Length: 190
Image (cartoon, one colour):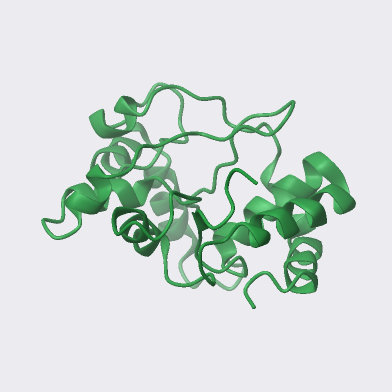
């Protein structure tokens, strides 16, 4: 196979990869998702370990050629003198679900019903959704703004355009237990 021994990844039991697997499950069903997981596992260069930055370092070190990861780590690595060389050794590609878009994880905020100061919590939530706060996230953390009209950072813009997956977060959340079960069933991280 083309990718035999060339893929590295953080553990698939990590929240990011469980969400990706849940989205795959929503688009392709249980059997295809299990087959996909088995295929990715069969092509791993090494046992899943570390974090997204570690995967970029593994590519830089020649241990593998491709990995799945969250793009905002790239902005952090570019700014770190030790890790910039790792970041410069890779390029970003946005994989697309057949008939869909690119899976995205989000940074979110929620208020519990037990919040002691609901008014202040609501004001914070409203601020975080504002143009100002979204621009701060975009520029300092290199995350994709969730609010239309807020510009992406120059680094993020340099990666090109893509179409986000239209699958709703509630759909992904509902399938997380089934996704984790499949990940464990194929012993992905073992």
